[in-house]
Image 1 (cartoon, rainbow, N blue to C red):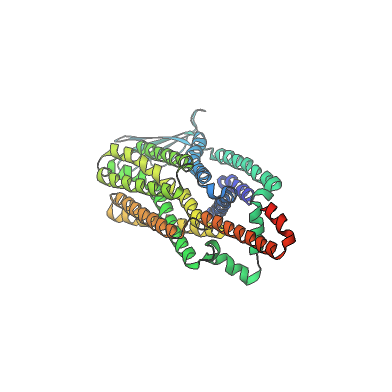
Image 2 (image 1 turned 90 degrees about the horizontal axis):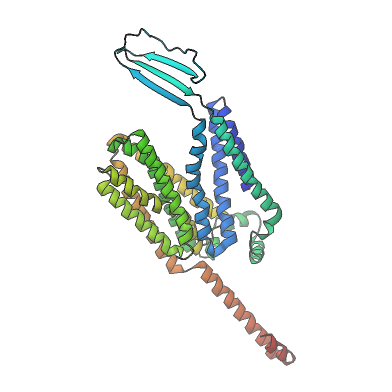
Length: 422
């Protein structure tokens, strides 16, 4: 499934620069977005199936790729972008009334002049034409090469995705028709038969991902505009700030991979939520007026925002079983959060000014802390699911031993054999 989705996304990337209609580009983006969701769900389920209760660190590594890709792809695309130089001359006496293009030496591909009503002339030089299709092709080749690993994995190692005991459990659970559908959508299926606990956890987890993804989109998409409009950053300075945000974001997720090896995820996510809240408070105190403070406190904000997503998946799996449908529901909550946060900040930014950005960030941070606190309390009241499974296995083992002893008591000729076996 992952390999096929990667191939489809690669084909879409190759086709986008050559698409003659906007509608076709929309369709390709829709198809790529669908495949991205499949990869996200299947990849996380694969990690949880292989590593089980030790999946927190691998999950952080998996999501580190998002931040790394956000840095690498622009570097691949930059050499193939058009290089345009624009110069404006005022109070000129040139009588230019229309746009025209002249032949230029090989170093320049075109030259355009435009004159407005104030007799100001803008000279636009296209120093290098866009060759963005090559950037799309390079990325598509890399993604296709990556997909081959998943095809090989499926061919040779698919039997080892689940532990042997999981195969038996899954086969016993599997039924058909309406009963199967009810079993899949029933929260009790992922919560050891406890419907109320399963429903509570999935509602709280969905709200957590609503906030985690929404805040990530909020800060990542609007920090550049805020820096320009509120603190008068130049375009280049704001772009550098945005790049540094993604660098800190990637470092935060990779740090989660290291720390999660020693710190239980139920404590790690509390530290992350507290870090987001403290960073948001500091940004609201100094981020409105001090450019240097915006530079400084953006870094811890990115660092603590980054691991909230993988930590949320790991925390959910700590208390309930993260099935494919469960992960789908949580990602749906994250997608809705991304849309809602961007819609809200867009409305407030346009109608009340750029200062609303920091107030939104503070509201997001408070919501994260509240959701993490509720998840921690509700989960703690019901305990670690892996611990519950271990206790169940020990109980079953004790019952089997008791059955053997009772059988030996009823069959004295087996007593010596039973004592040796025990």
